[in-house]
Amino acid sequence: MEKLQAALDTARKTRSGVPKGRIATPSGRRIAPGDGESLSVLWRELAPFDVDNTLLETNRIVSRAANSAAAPFDILRTKALLQMRQNGWKRLAITSPMPSSGKTTMACNLALGLGRQRDLRAILFDLDLRDPSVHEVLQVRPQASIGRVMSGEVDFADQAMRFGDNIAVSMAQHAEVDPARLLLAEETAHVLDEIEARYRPDLMIFDLPSMLVNDDTRAFLKNADCALIVARANTTRYAQFDTCEREITEQTNVLGVVLNAYRHAGKGGD
Ligand SMILES: Nc1ncnc2c1ncn2[C@@H]1O[C@H](COP(=O)(O)OP(=O)(O)O)[C@@H](O)[C@H]1O
Ligand SMILES: [Mg+2]
Image (cartoon, rainbow, N blue to C red):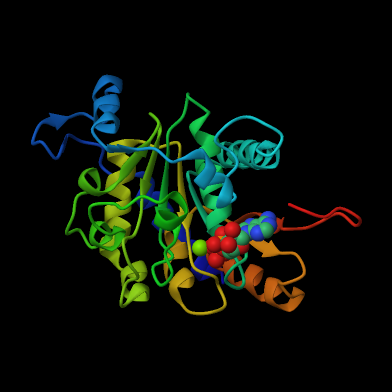
């Protein structure tokens, strides 16, 4: 356990020491990532997309505008940001013990809520590669699938899409054949480092698979600074939650637990 922790610490130190030299943009220009003006250009060059508000509501994405429905996600966003800043963390994994717990709903709500924080930038990655659904929830089709970005075949600049000025989303087009290999790969870690160095997001959110159904999330967690566990009321069993939390703790920090779809007694509806 101590050895694992030491290895993780070393990996994180190496990661934060990613060379921040001059990097070629897709158009071939060379920019210094620290340059605010060039950074804005890089973000502006990502293909923009917008989503119909009715569709968002249908898919339970309620955080685009500040209102009472968005309030719980705003609280979560602020708490997560504060805790992550205090610890110097930028990479947030979202997982759950079992599928259909609300991970993607949570990840999209967090991302769109962060869109209202004009002073920061965030990137959402759909890495639930067996069952990707961010593109379905947002009804957007990227030019290529996120798997090709992670394997280094396609540049993030040509694949990720921009929501508003400050949120980038790297989505899938389809499920991948061998997700665990991709999520475990050194190349994936390297690509993420490059994206972080080039786009300098304040937050990177990873919508991951459930912990207990396969090895995908275990394979990836070394790339995250912390994880949020989504448990679903009346569905997730305590033993599942307990195993999930223990396994995450072996690989990264648990930022918190969200109990999704909990209804107060006597209150119906959503
Ligand atoms: N709080 C909630 N109340 C009711 N339905 C929800 C809630 N959160 C998510 N859902 C629905 O549950 C289903 C699974 O959610 P999803 O976010 O796709 O889960 P996961 O990504 O964990 O598989 C979706 O149809 C989603 O709209
Ligand atoms: Mg999902």
